[in-house]
Every structure is written in structure tokens, then in C-alpha cells.
Image (cartoon, rainbow, N blue to C red; front, side, top):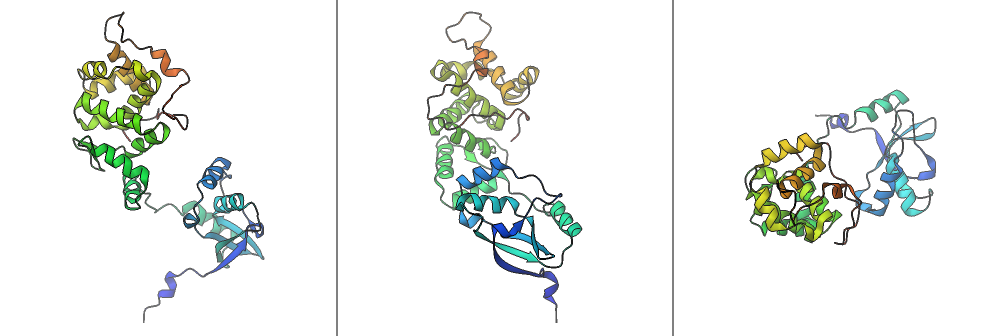
Length: 284
């Protein structure tokens, strides 16, 4: 008979008050108060994972879940609050450190498109709204790069959340009308740059002029110009302003590049500061 017990860790499950748990061993990272605060503001009881605890010499050492206990403590307002723990009785300090160091080594993280699709299955309003908006332009959200597909799904969500539906709508409309479905035109930095221009210049940005002047150059040429300016989204935004302004020194449609770096005064119900991705060109 097969012995399946060898595949089961020797643990017990106990509800232990947070005050009776010890964390912050030398091998652990420091607690991120920003992460704890954000998670507490979006607290969901069903997202809590069991805390892994090593019981040595009668002391409950947390070796996985130190942020979890701080989040629960903050939300509940008490360190008397219990959390479910997987309690190991047979570990030594070095083994705990080894588990902590390697616990994510063979874990495959979820891709943005996979998270987005799961949110669709959950009927979450934000993702359903974004999907409907994208499809209204004859486009698709997909993990496969092809004409008419948008793969930079996290950028769609970022623009929607940072600004709102109307900004994302205008961003997609401008890009689709300018480059007519070129799959490279819906890369992360292109979309972020267009949204940045909409945020900064508002109605000063003439959509017809944008489509006429930017449509005369390819995405590849725009990226080359951007690289000569500066890295990431801001380089693309500058390149777009240069092409939009054209070669004439005097024009009723000219935009000031310096305005890109002024504090945004955006009136589309902006909810948080927009932080452009300055690390990558033409990728999600």
C-alpha cells in the first residue's frame, strides 16, 4: 500500500492570538507599513492565508505570514485577535530560514492577463467595464500579440484607476484612430504616454491634429525618437509632443514640453497621482 503520509507536512492547525506570535527573525524582510496599510484598506477575509509557525522551545516563531498578522491586527484593532496557523514542531532556525529563502523558488506568478480574466469570471465591475470599452472599438484584450489585440492589460487598469473611464476611452480612441490597430501602438508606454498628454493638456490637445501628425510616423520611429530623449513613458510623451507640434515655430496647436513636468491639475475625477513607467520601452 502506498504511504501518502510522506506528502503531508507534520503540522497542526491552531487559532493563535497575534500577541502570542513572534516575527521579525533575522532572515526575514522588514515589515512594509505601506503594504500593511494598503492591504488593510482593501481587507478581504477570504484572501487571508494560514500563517506558518515554527514552535521552538514553546515560542511561536512566524516564518511565513508576518505581514498577514500585522494586517489583521490593524484591521481588528487588537493583537488579541487570533489567526489560523500551520504549526510545525520539528523545525530548527536554519531550516526555517531555508524555507523562507526558497518558498517562492518554484512558484509560477500569475500574469496580468490571467488575473484580469479571473476578475472577469468574478463579474468584477472594473474589468467588465474595461473589456466592454476595448471591444467597442473592435479590439480585444489578449495575451497574444497580434493586430487588434491589447496585451498591456495592467496599463489599461492603471489608466482607468488613476484617471477614469473617459480618459481611457479617449486614449484608446486616439491610438486606434492614429495607428489603425498596429499592435505595437497598444504597448504599455504608448498608452501611458497618450494618457499623460490627455491629463496634462486636456482640451488643448486636438485629437484631429494628433491623428494627422502622429499618424505620419511609425511606432518604431516614435520609439527611436523617444530613446534619444529619455527612458520610458516620459521619453515617448516628449516624442509625441515634438511630432504633434510639427516643424513650424508658431502654431495655434503647439504644446509646451515643459508642461509635461508640471504638477497635473486634472479635472476628470483623478483619484491618485499618475506614476509613469520609466523603466521599459515598448513592453508591458
